[in-house]
Structures are given as C-alpha cells and as structure tokens.
Image (cartoon, rainbow, N blue to C red; front, top):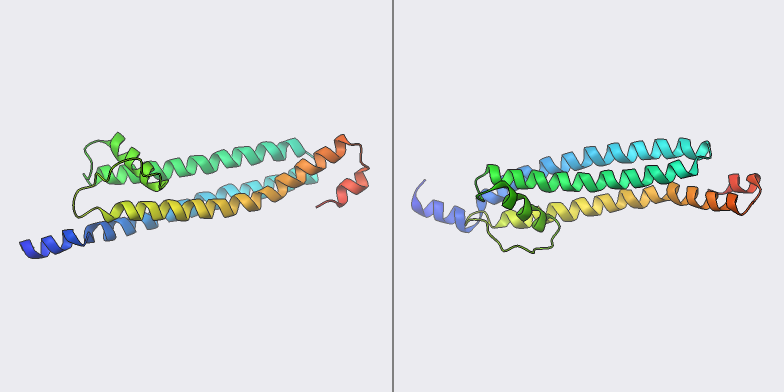
Length: 170
C-alpha cells in the first residue's frame, strides 16, 4: 500500500468501519441469543409460577432475570474491551475495557484515546450500546406484565379478596 492510500484509509477510519462492524455484528448476535434465552426462561417459569399461585417466585425470577440482563451488558463491554486490546489499539486490557464501557454506555467519561484510523470505532461501540439497551428495555417492559400480575395477585390475597376474583385478574 502506498503512503497516499494509507493516509486516505486512516483519515476515513476505514479499518474501524470494517472491523467495528464485524465485532458489532458478533456482539449483537450474542446479545440476541442471551436475551432470547433469559426472556424465554422467564416467560415459561413465571407462567408456571402464576398458575401455581407462587407469586414470590415470580418476583424472584424477575429480579434474577434483570440481574442476568445486567451481566449480559457487562459481558458485552468486556468483549469490546478484549477486541480493542486484541487489535493493539490500547496498551493494556484494563484501559481497553474501561474505554469500551465508557463508550458502550455513551457516558464518554474517557478521552478519545484510540489511534488515528480507529476513531470511528468509538461511535460504532456507542451504537452497539444504544441498540443493545433499547432491545433490552423492550424485553424488560414485556417481563413486567407477569411481575405486575404476581404483585397485584399477592396483594389481593393479603386483602382477603376471594380467590375467584383474584383468578380472573390478568
């Protein structure tokens, strides 16, 4: 590659687009698989718990699932950090993970420390975080249906409302 084409490539951040998009796709596939597993297990378990009138188990399942979603996002931040470090863009793994987390959450509390030709990677990481958080939020909203139902039915029982009325509540 001659100096002019290398300069154009770096000034347009072409490496960051190509590599960033590939990593973004892998992380979004990971996100989708884990999100589907957590939400599927939550829906099945809470459906059964509601049928058995085990309302506190629904609550526990809800909070465990939310914690699983949190761990999924932490894992994605670590995957971005490992990718940045593996590409030799930052000198140590801790700094790479911190930069990945700062960018993924769009908090931006770190300076842009990526080398020339890789600056656009920060934007791609931020997009992955925004899409991942939005996707997760939509799943969390659907999860609240069973949680709310269990919560309300539990309180109806505490108020000594007839079980026939409680069973009609959905």
